[in-house]
Every structure is written in structure tokens, then in C-alpha cells.
Length: 253
Length: 256
Figure 1: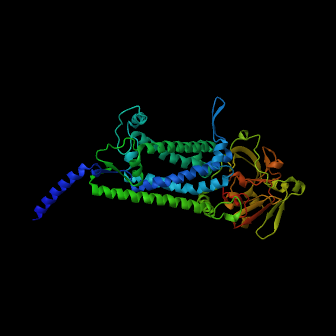
Figure 2: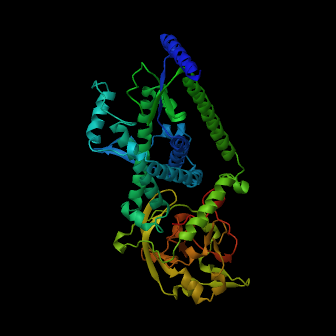
Figure 3: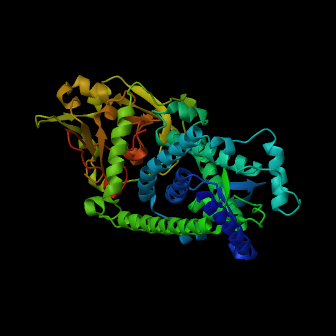
């Protein structure tokens, strides 16, 4: 009796699945779990916190804005031109900048520390740390992204270029904390100031790292837009939903 | 990475889960904006223009506790040879230095003791104590720094010489210019640091007027804002003495 029911169910299931598969929109789908809940939270917390750190850093930098890129005595880039300061309402806000910087530094630090700890203990680091050959492969990824190469190098969750980028950004985070402390407490953490090459050098390094974040952000956003909806969904919901017929998106971030 | 094929019914479940995730996502963005608005609209501490929001001030005070806990008097600020010192010393700030209201001949350093009586010291009295040189990288809160050479007497030597032992037990030192226009508050450990000096010479010559003649504070473990020029009165308190730049939204501690 029971087995008879099972057979009937089985037949019905085949019948219905055949029926459904005729309809494209009702095809079976593939679910790919990509980003863990903790990763997503820390990623999205970092976004506004880093933005506030960069903004308040600009308020501080303005008070002694001496950096520029010069080639043969010609000023190529001045950090920063007046229109830039005007546009972001930067001038005469040093005290405000310092206050925000030395409050939100804690969130930046704690969130970063939790991320690194989580990545190590969850084993996620295996997807993130560059491997042997990552450098060569990242070149191929670049050519592929620029449509100069047809095939994409093999990847797991992240491709070689992403492994290098996402590991670098963590090292940069460490760099910001070390150079930041070297400027903030150059006497009590004198050894940090020393390894940075001195107080003035630490300030330059802290600034360059920030420029690095901005460049990272710009490339990151472009890549996310190019990678498309499913990839973005994965950073919010955690998974991608792919129709079986589809090939997985090739420029996943 | 976990991957699996689902049938249509289960796929719908994932569509629903996507929706929920995005609703939570947008709620969080809203919460972040609301939190930011709340923070920047908090009343400013002290209620004066240029002050900072009370929650920010609270965190800065917590930072002070954390980092003054790390503070060690045995950690010295790096010193340089005299040859490294700048000849043209940068001048920043002239609050409290109005010469119309200053009579150099009648100037005396006033030290208010905890009992309430005042000690009057002439520059010659101060010069009797051992003179030391401090050549270090002077750091301005604006972000620039300059190696400069200063000479004077250790603040801790003044305290010991005049028997200010009870005063040294108190939490803060307050210093104020003769015209009372500029004033700083300094935590006692930083004031008693061996490189903190009451300074009367710059580059081996008497202090220029714009550097606070006849006597200024050099306190290498702090930013320039605490290096009060032309000290008039020194007092000792357990509550934070008033501080010119802290009133204008800067961190009170500003210690290195």
C-alpha cells in the first residue's frame, strides 16, 4: 500500500517536473552560498566607518595641506585644490575632524580586528590569501576584464586579482593603524613611529594609504556594477541564484 | 562555497529570503543615517561655537583615560643635536601676548599653593635652578612639526625646590598668561615629565616676545597648544582647569 503510494508520487513528480521544465521561468535553479553572514555585516559596517574616517581625515589634513605630486618642478597634483575643499566643506574644521577621527577609529579598529579573527578561525582565509601563481594569474584576470583575453583563469570564490586586492586591503588596514598610532602617540608608541621612519614619514604614509582606499573603492564599485545583480545580492543576502541554463557570471567580485 | 540545485518551490523561498535580506539592508542604511543625524545634532559641550558634540567629548575623555594609562614618565621624547635645531622657529598663535597689557619689568611668576597663598618668583629666582636643554621635534596639532632648541628649568625641579609636594599630589596643573587671555590645563604626570620645562631661552638666547618672553612652557609630551607662552600664574587643581583650545572643541589631553 505504502510502496504503491510512493510509486504514484514518483510518477507524478516526474510528470510535473517535465511539465515545469517546459516553462523556462520555472526551471530548476542553482543556489550558491557565497558570503557568510558575519562577512556581510563587517563589510557593510566598514563602508560608512571608513567613509567617516576619510572625511574626518580630510578635515585634519586641511590644517597642514602640504602634499603634492611634482614632476620636474611642475605640480602635477595638489592635495587638494580649492574647489575640492569647497565642494566637501573642509576648511576650518580641524577640531571637529580630530574629534570624529578619534571616536570612529575605535569602530574601524574593532571591526577590522573582528574581520581578521573571523577570517582566520572560519577558514575563509583559504579563499582570500594569494596563492602561488596568483600574481601571474591576476594579470590574466586584468586582460580578461579589459576584454583583451577571452578565457577567464580558473577561480574558486575569488579570482587571483581579488585575492591580491582583498588581502592587500587588510594589510593596508594594519598599515593605517600602525601609522595612525605613530602620529597619534609618537612618544608612548615611539617604536611604531620609528618603524614608520619618523613622525613626518608616518603622516605621509597614513595619507598615501588613504589615497589607496579611495582608489580601491573606485575600482571596487566599477567591478561590482560590471559583475551585476547576482553578485551584489550575494553581499546582501549571502547567496546567488542562477538559472541552470545560465553560465555563472564571469566577473564576480 | 556551498552549491545546490533547487526546484521551483524552494527557489521561491530563496526569492523571499532575498527580499527579507534587502529589507533589513535598507532598514540598516536608514538606521545608520538616523544615528548619524542624532550624533551631529547632539548639543555641543560647553555650548560654545566650535565645541564638539557631547558624545564625541565623552569618547575623547575615555581615550584620555585609556592612553594616559599607557603613559610612562620613563619614556622620553627623542632628542636631537643642537645643530639639527631650526634657526627660524615657526610662530603660531599670539593669544595672551598683547604687549600693550604687559610690563616686563614687573613680571613675576605666581605659583598659587594649595593652602591659597601665592609664591612670587622672578626670572632670576628661576634661573638659579639647574638649566637644561631640550631639543626635540615640536609638534603642532595642525600637523606640522619642527626640531627646535629650548632651555630652562625642569618643572619638576621647581616643584621640588619650593616644596610643592602636596601640590604634586593633585591631578592637574593650570597655567594662565598675565593678561588671562590664554590658559591651559595639564595632567600632573605630563607636567612632572623630566622633559617638561619652564623655558626662558630659545636657540641659546632669551625668548623673543612672540615666543612668550620671559617664560613659557615647553612640554614635549603634548601638542604645541599646551606650550603656553608667557606664563603668569600656575595653580593646582583636582578638577580639569579651563583650557583655551579644549573650549574650542579640541581634545583636552592632546598627549603623545
